[in-house]
Picture 1: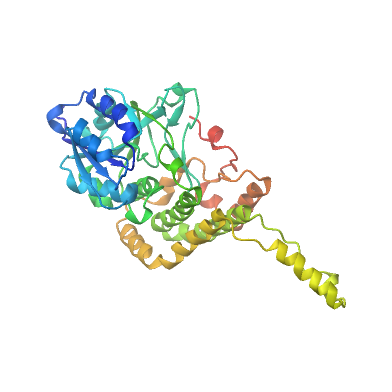
Picture 2: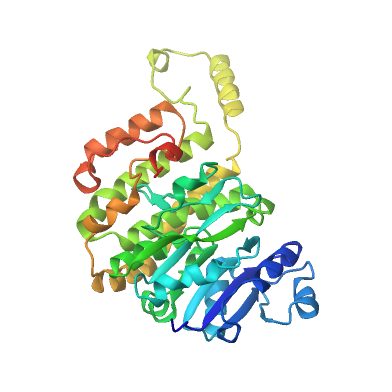
Length: 393
């Protein structure tokens, strides 16, 4: 086999404590050395990462950024600085098997696929972290097999909606033609967006379980305030569905998705409707003292907006205020469409996943399916409460 040259692009943010395990495993990779380069993009770390790389990883070319460009922007900067025919993206909190790279690149080399993704296991290798991908109709992605100890269930290659950005490969020209990761996403769901887009543009994404990596799940994000992550995780799914669905599908899905968003925001607001419903008391005469007491009780119910709810509001605000730019991206994608959504949505696997556990949330999803006739798009899939059971192989 004529092995293509490969660039492994790694984005780092204060991940120095992961480097020893990462580079020890990369040095054991059995890919032809003269065809391999490592580009480390440092997103303005302050933990001595760059100094460690200079001293201990001469095989890596370090691209030092003056500010944090997020995962999407960091990857794109690394891609621009790299030379390989095949691009490989790997998280800093990973270690890989010796044959990880060969297996990941083989389907691309043989033209079986344009983009591939590894089987990712927990750090101790006892549970699945990524065994394929799934998504519901309003853009919430899921890593198939998450926390499942029955690893053998995920040993079979399969088409998948998106490749996990933590361990994936893609032909350079395909990445360029598809537009790469959307830097406006900053982090989270940029890989879901790219995968959906690749299928729209006629490419194929393949899950390759023969390629195995091990992951410290959420090692970076757990150090970031929850509401900052929630903003990205609520906004970016809206962007990706707006960009990628074809017109007839979007016209039904987008209003339903916004209603789901509102309901999720209501949960974190802990909305209490007491005092907001008109009752018989409103038409009765009140004494001045009664009015004073009523206003005092109302003021006690008026509290500040919880940070997660404000994040949800900002997510919708970003979606609307930046809609012209997202619409321009959508126009380009739809003009180049090579595959209808009817051929893509079977890859969603859990289109009607109810992401909140409250029973009335699943009831709302069922009502939205009926009101917007979503079953005509996604089929008569069940309302899923736990994606770990619904998305098993």
